[in-house]
Image (cartoon, rainbow, N blue to C red; front, side, top):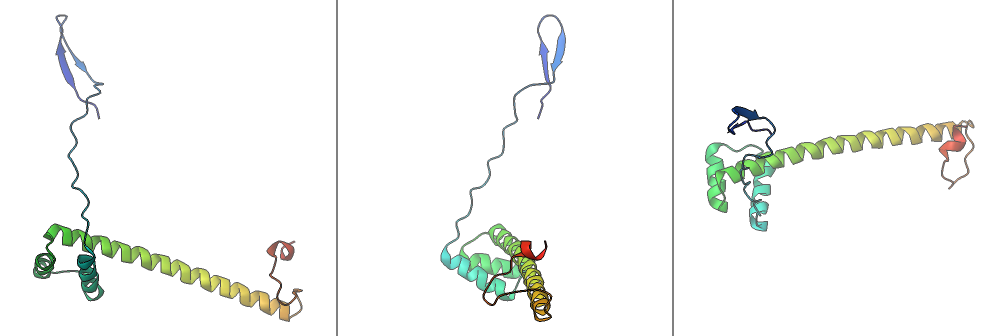
Length: 130
């Protein structure tokens, strides 16, 4: 970021467009270290309630000794984690289905005599494809 500075040095006024001075940065709040009990209770609540009403949020915050902002942030982060986990699971299911389809295809080709395969031997795709 550049700051405009005006200087008067006897020869007139000019602007310095390339000052190295940065505006002071706001200090970030330190990361909250939740206790095991707080995490357990938050996870338990999340199992049946992905979104909290303001009244529920107040109750959870007060019960666990947290601020409303901490509860809001925890639930936002937990929903994001759930979404990532579900996307990863979908990828795993798709990969498994592709591998199963491929294995079934290889088995069928072998049974039809179109592929030679010794029992207990792993398939070498390089041999199969040329």
